[in-house]
Image (tube, rainbow, N blue to C red; front, top):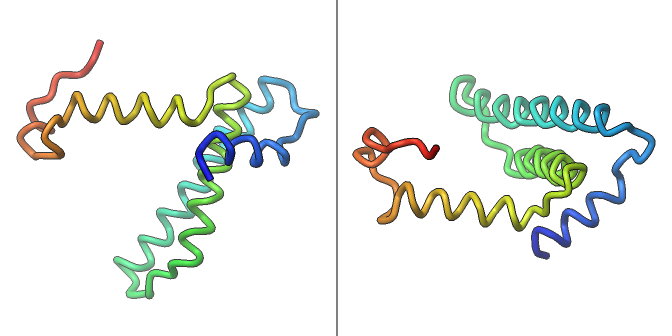
Length: 110
């Protein structure tokens, strides 16, 4: 499945009764909440000695992706656009792959 197919299918469960403002708020808050759940899985693994539950991690990452897909959609943005823009930014920032030196000395794009 490609990103735009996912976005279209994820949009089936978008609440079409929400105003634009409510949708933006709902998806932005939902995204941060789900990202927190991903972080909690990692925290429990690293600091509490829990096994990292790959199934639960996939579920939480899926929830993050759902909110991203719908947040982009209500703004008329396709996920493939987001992915392409991000990869282009990273290629420019780290042309030879990540390095600490490039990270420390990078100039922010204007």
